[in-house]
Amino acid sequence: MLRPPLTRLLWILLLSQFYLAASISSAAEPMLWPFQPEVSPDGATVAFTWEGSLWTASSDGGVARRLTDHPAWESLPRWSSDGESIVFASARGGSSDLWQIPAQGGRARRLTWWSGTDLPCDLSPDGSELIFSSDRIDGWKKGARLYRMAIPPAGSPPEEPTRLTLAASSSARYSPDGQQLLTQREGTDWTRQGYRGSQSGQIWLYHLESGDWRPLTPAGIPHSSPVWIDQQRFLMVEDIDGRGQLVERDIDHRNRRVWTSFEHDSVRFPSVSDDGNIVIFEQGFHCWKLNRSSGQIVPLEFLAAEDLPDTGVEDLNFSSATSASLSPDGKQVAFGCQGDLLVRRTEKGLPANRVDAHPARDDDPVWLPGGKKLLFVSRRSGTEDLYTVRSSEAGEPRLDRCLTTEVKRFPGPEVRRRSPGLSPDGQQIAFLHGDGDLAVQDLDGGHFRLLHSGWAPVEFRWSPDSQWIAYSTLDQDFNRDVWLVRSDGTMFPFNLSANPRPDLNPAWSPDGRKLCFVSQRDEEGGDLWWLWLRKEDFQQTREDRILDDDPPEEPPSAAPKKNPPKSDPPKSEEPKSSAPGSALADDDKPDPRLQNLPRSR
Image: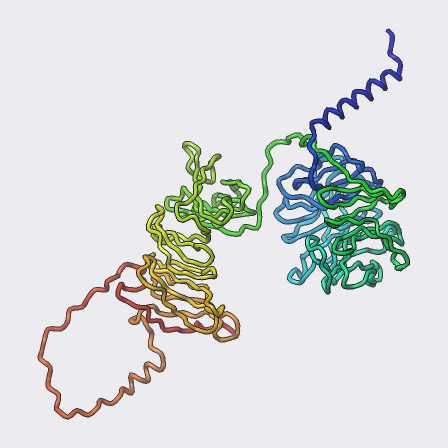
């Protein structure tokens, strides 16, 4: 049997690879704005974020390969020193944590668990540990702190990170010998180009063993994103004439070289190969490559050819709910989370069902009577408005179990509407109308009435009998008072608190005769105050009892008093509004008397 020469086989293989690459490239899509590029230690590969996923491609450009395929946003890739794995930030656990994935693809493993924000900075030259920034301590102060943690071996749980610095800093990078850090302190967001002042970012040198800090750049001029070239030189982004340019400096301030002169946008996120020759950075909507040996700077074009193979059904994890509502029968709970609406059974351990996955933000769900429909707020029309969602699956009306849903706009005026509140009788909806108005309409969309007009949003609460609404709002002097108004719109709002100190967050008693709110009138912070809404419910104060024991004298009369004619005693009249939980009778006017709830010391 004759075999073809080896050279012929090689040529056939090379040609087949060429035609395969050509066919893929012709069907590929140019990737606009690859984000946060990071070059591999050998300078051959670039990892970056595009459309929320991590991708890798040749540092010369070309077809990119998707590395992660998860609905969560993933960013800031950082290569290990051997180029075998990548650490990145991902919100797939509900908040931004650190994850690690093989550089050739595979299953990602989680490295940190924190409800705030963890962002990777760099991995040590020996690959044993990593530096990251986090808000886990002193998060209320401006800026994050640096933390250090050992990278656990495969199959081992990660250790607890330790805080490295007390000073706020970010964008830290290990020196080639692993003894020092380049890091940025202060600084405004990279979108604020051209800023100069006291908040301008500075590049500092931090010694890991001694803990000494040393500034490397002058104050007042923005500097950011430092990366080492070698043990003595580094690159950074420096503001020059309002644009961030790529600048090279040495730590002893002897030499300075400006590599770029972009006019329309700034350089962002530079990274350098281990030999200091290949530099990849972001500018405009593209990534760029600088060869320091030749001085050549060229834009890179990455192409997206296809997604990763589908690995099957994946459960999504949601956290940080911003609103919630319990169904009328108490068996289901709806909540807004990460811009979506979810419904689940109240029993522990059962999964939630995402009832709407529109790209716009959906929030503030409210169950409507019957427990088969939700009212919620959405921005899908360009501004906040009210919508309803219900099951559209035949034979399955439960929102926690249905596979398909139907969304409709809630009838009413085409204006900004938000913060809905269902009346206790289930017949009316109150909501914020426009910027600061309070409106009510019937559940069928009819009988719209405007109860309050203002410039600032109100906080409101329905009375138990659904006939009144208590609310607090700001006046023209930016002071907040508690007001009362009838829900049918037949009475002008009445100021219940009328105090020069802020009064807010009204709440009704179950019988509707008493109102409680938070007040700052004692100038010692918020305290609880309450008032009776009907005169006959007033409790006597000490002053009342003293006056009862010392009534005023009757004025002298010139003529003796005549005995009045006898008559039948008056018949007792029933109150005009005697429904359970009624706040006021129909002919009542609010006649409040304030009392302070005692404070525990």
